[in-house]
Image (cartoon, rainbow, N blue to C red; front, side, top):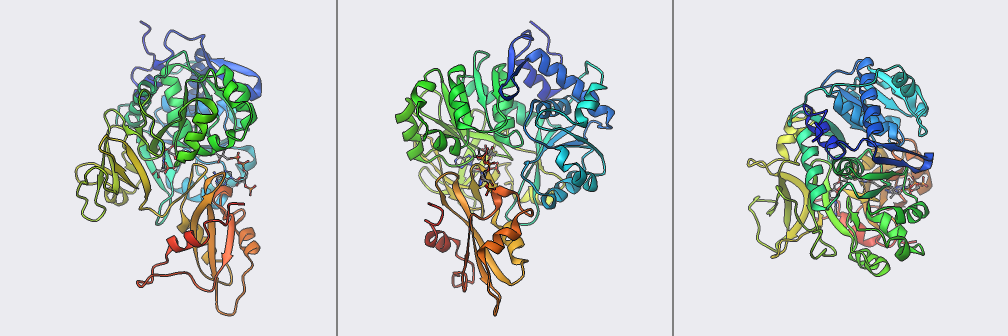
Length: 508
Ligand code: MLC
Ligand code: AMP
């Protein structure tokens, strides 16, 4: 048996496990660049990147932050950071300078890798080194790597050591950095690989961004652990995906992938060779599930996870994939539903708060011990903020959220952040931001705004004022001006009433 060169580094060992002795096997089909990479080439690249990171001053425990378009170079920075014992901190490319400032101040990265267009802004914010990488791989990162040595001895890292920090917004205050350990990510990759039957024979269509849990921890980590090839696409493009399906066996996506693909011809023929379609990050409508089965003959496998926990539950590989449910707790992971007030466990069929415990559950929020303590029960269960039920036969269904959160096209959006910005605009008395059904993104953002006495407000002017302040996916798709917000007798804004009143506003 081939020895694992990264034996001392918990996560690197797991990510290398699938390709030991298979150096020449196909790892990445970089379709848009017209080139491919073997496993041997990817890990040689990662080792060179690790040397480059160290040469930039990155030490074990330091943070390496990346805000750059998806590319093999960004994947190599991730693997290089893991090998160097640093924590990888990916950021959504849509974040504006206003949003970035908090992440950089909070994580205090030793190195930020960014798009060349963002370099000046990042240099103004970051204390550490800054390198650039464009979508085609060019930039100062490439220069640093060109000067780096080949070969790198993986820095020893134990199960509980920090591997990644992923920022998630919150219902109150600033974004929190979720600290994922080597064991969190390694255990989830192994569990999912086995549960979903991934082997080196697979080819995964990888069209998700790699700055979130879905694209990085699920799609990329599972593929590396299984040693299967990935067709690595810069972004989701339905026509490209349809043309590539005959070469692939599996795809992972958010529900918008499936609703968009469903409008295309030729799905049945294109998907004939596929064995698995996975959906997650947002609710998949039962209607989409059934529509996909009718169009392709494949039942989508829906699973449930979150940034703080990676994946928690999954519909079965063999057995009934029940539409509208997220399936069973994954092996080794406990899921319970409790009374949100008393925290007493509820029985089958009752709706309550979903709580999770297992090797997948994160270590806590970066430098926020009190916030971390608030979200855990004394017995170690993490309070997800999702509401759901567990059926007599064990299927978990998510029915809502106790947190004020909108999920649009698989991205989380916290109304409070948007309300804060709108409330600061001239002439605005108050605002309420809420989600309503959107045919493409599942939910879309709507803002209800009340003017100050004597002021008039123009919805378009409000939308324009938010451009450049908020990542584009968070911007309201509609703004309505109201005389007053609906409130209950306690004075609390009734977002449900707003959601009902404007349920059709984004239906087009
Ligand atoms: C893009 N737009 C969105 C949006 N994505 N609006 C709302 N919600 C979204 N998700 C807007 C842009 O602002 C722009 O508006 C217009 O749509 C076109 O932008 P685009 O970049 O061309 O969009 P497109 O490439 O089509 O992106 C759509 C998408 C993308 C669905 C492919 O959003 C995506 O890849 N989503 C995946 C998110 C993801 O990976 N989530 C996982 C989180 S991990 P305008 O007005 O400027 O034209 C997690 C845990 C778990 O949740 O369980 O997995
Ligand atoms: P994030 O914070 O981006 O990781 O988003 C995690 C949230 O996405 C969860 O708390 C759920 O609310 C939601 N989510 C993930 N997968 C699903 C799913 N299959 N069905 C419904 N909601 C989901």
